[in-house]
Every structure is written in C-alpha cells, then in structure tokens.
Length: 313
Image (cartoon, rainbow, N blue to C red; front, side, top):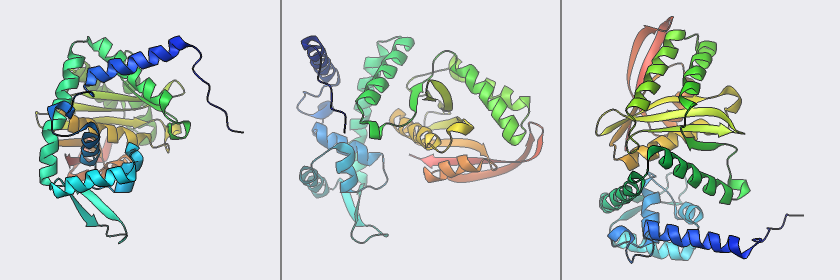
C-alpha cells in the first residue's frame, strides 16, 4: 500500500514554513504587480525564461515542466504569438506536433528581464561573505531536493565547491586519466594549475564549479571560468567510472550552459581530446560544434589530437 503523507506535527512547524514562504516572497519580489518592474506577470516571466533556455519546445512540455493548466498556458502563448514574441512551426518528425520558439523580438524582450533578475540575485548575494553564499546555495539545493517527488529525484546531488574539493578534483583526474589514457603526472600538474587559478581568481558572478555527489561521496566535477568578457570556458568535466550511465555528465554540462547564459557570456568554449568519446558525445548533444583540431604530444603520449568546441549562447 502507498505510504500516507505525514501531517505537520506541531503548529510551530506550520508557522515556521509559512513564515519562510512570506520572507522569501518578499525577498524576490513576487508581490509586485510586474515581475522585476516589467510588463510581464510572474507566470509569463517563467514561460519566457523556460523558452529562452531551449531552442524549441512544445506546449505539452511547458505545461508539464511548469505545472501550468494547459488552457491557461494556451492563452498566454496566444498572447505571446499575437505580440510577435514567439513563433510556431510544424515538427519535421511529427506533423501533429507544433514546436514553439522565441522570435528575435521575444529574446529582446527577455534580455532585460533576465539581466534585472541577475542583478537582483547579485545584489542579494553580494551582501554575504563567500562562505555564506555557498551555505545559502547549498540550503536551496537541499530544499529543492527534499520537496521534489521521490520519482523525480536524481540519484545524485549537484552542489557548489567547498574546502577539500579542489584536491579531490586534481587527484581523481591524475588517477583516472593515467588508468584510462596513460597520461602521466604532467597532466595532473596541468589540472592543479587550473584549479589553483580558479580558486585565486574566483568571481561568483562569472565562475562556477559543480561537484556531483552520490551517497555522500564525490563522483563528478565541472567548471566554468571566465576567458573574456563575452566568452566562458568549460573545464575539467569528470565522472567516476562507477557513476557513469546516470546522466551526471549530461547534467553537469547543462548546468554550465545555463550558468553561462545567466552570467552574460555570448559563447562558451572547451578544449578536449579526440579520444574522449563519451565526453565528446555529451558536448555534441548539448549543441557544441567542433571548430578546431590539432595534433600534439603531451603527458607521455605522442598520438593525441586536441579539439576545440564552441557553443553560441
């Protein structure tokens, strides 16, 4: 028999949850008439945000992902189409399916909304010390994980970096790349230099590290770092062998792309090796395009082919 939900045990618990809801609502301004002083309501803003993260989508996907009534969503999308913010095209794979995408006008309308949202979060986070920022992000992730239906919970958790993680990233890159590709300790030294530079120059608005954790154990990592004002760089994607097949690599790369867009980068690039077939497949599926190849001799190997991949945001 299905397990029944347990009721809140005390009036104090109920009051605490409602107090937090009121507090957070005030923090992000949901009670304002227009979302972030714009012409859009909260729901309209959520729809624009979701569509901006995807090249194309469908009304069914939006309704499911946002938990919106299909009829209500249809009316909003109709208004967007009338205003020239979205366009509809027939799916090349299924004539019964209509694909939705933002027009140039739609993306132009979304850009200031996205920028003000980033500014609002940056202002709120800027009042906190870096360690408190990390604690807040981790608390938010915990709330999201706990309140998600069990069937929708991933078997792993993504979190921001904390003391001790950088050493783990270096050590696991050294061990795994030696075992799987015979890269010697000079590759480990390269990774150590990358993470040292990340820590020394860390800017929360432009740089980010994600650590994938399963059953309390680190199982993956990825970084986004600033290459220039308009270009972010994806670095050090790694997933432990026993954790592969869970979609961790795909999720880590997706988080990088999402963050790069929010950070205002126009392009995200990466440097990898042609023999890393699983990683290359993830990059290609995420929309990255191969833009350069170069033979080189490094880390005791004389037969390497370096590849540069790019994704325009």
